[in-house]
Image 1 (cartoon, helix red, strand yellow):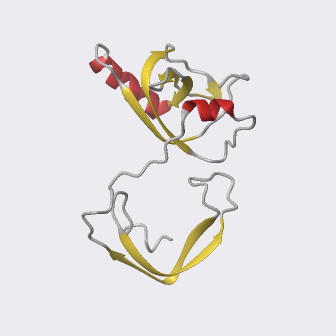
Image 2 (tube, one colour):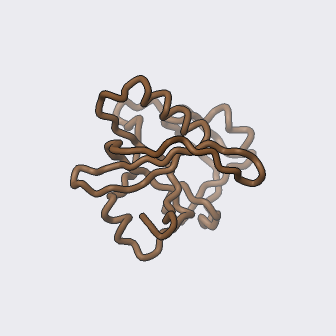
Length: 155
């Protein structure tokens, strides 16, 4: 894969030849798809310039669908979108012997369903900096590849 790191870029489209397909058995998944691609020395990657290919691709999960799940697969990373409606103060718990920063946000969907969202370290700082500059405006958050978990039995 190291041969292709400089060729592959987010928000671009590519034509790829000579690759392998394997079962998606990894612990943490960025997709629900059952297969993953693996590149090797004969893999060929070409830029594909297409004005019709979307630049941003999300797979948004509905809040009520997440909340109704009996079991949450925390190995499947998900996308959500919601309006920011509340936050806790920044906290600094000790995790694995070192201090970490976190903030807990509440997001709301158009139907009034709410979910909690914890932002850690750099994401915590990015949010607080943005919030300080825009606290009197409506803030909508797109969370891409978030790890869903129940916190102390709550959604």
